[in-house]
Image (cartoon, rainbow, N blue to C red; front, side):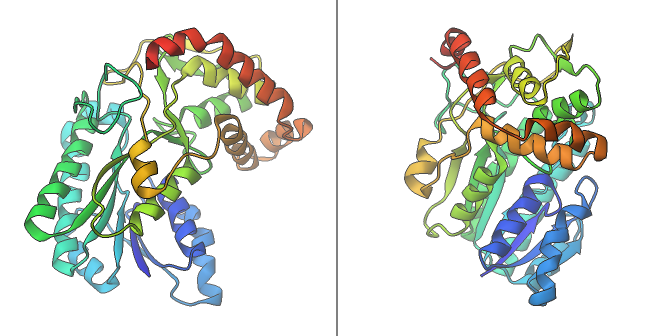
Length: 356
């Protein structure tokens, strides 16, 4: 099969590209490299040494008129649409830029898809913001839409445009409403990515900054699990369409994430609390029962294991000093898991209120 991936050099996109190639796909990746990292595609490009043409990279913007020709030339059986502007605060400060990328870019891709005869599009929607302050957690796909930031509005608009094109041009979109995705290759210097940001600050000996009092909670889902959801959606029967939550269903507070990363790195660094950011939710968790039933998907990587994998990657890619800091613990999980279990027990009452 041939697959086209937008946002191919990004954190999730490049991980998806690697998985598709491992599964035998021929892959065409598109990225304008404004935030994507070319080095993320080194493994993908290595496939061409043994099988020329297995992976093709096209540097292009999804807003460009040339996208129609690129998609037609690629002739994919499925498009995975992950290219997006994901900086929440930048969307607040410049809603127009956010909309041009996330709305107009998605419309352009819809046009390219139907004009090229590609029916299946799998879209990276935002499950962490589409429901707003949901009164009941974990939120199902039937929860009321309540986007409360320009970023959230634009991502929901992408879903609605895909639905409209499905009715007008018989495309078959699947929207994956993603919880807070984390894992290797996530930018530790970005606006998102709490786990890598905390790890970077602790490895550098700095006190991490936490927006709010640390009680805000999110549903953290590991990148390999998310990529598996994309692959399953891409190969689902063409009659399977609509929106599917992709998350663990569990709330984890910022303070708890800080404790977990601190325990893994033997760090005594205390966070610096500052004012919460505009547009951020106090709590969100996603009910993924529909994805399990219709796509056969469920989250498999638990938070302790996922954090260990992420921090190991961060250490290995942050210079020799950081890598040396990680080696004495030998990445043994018994003490870490015990710490995690104790903290979950201690916080159970608070979390019970959030997810009741």
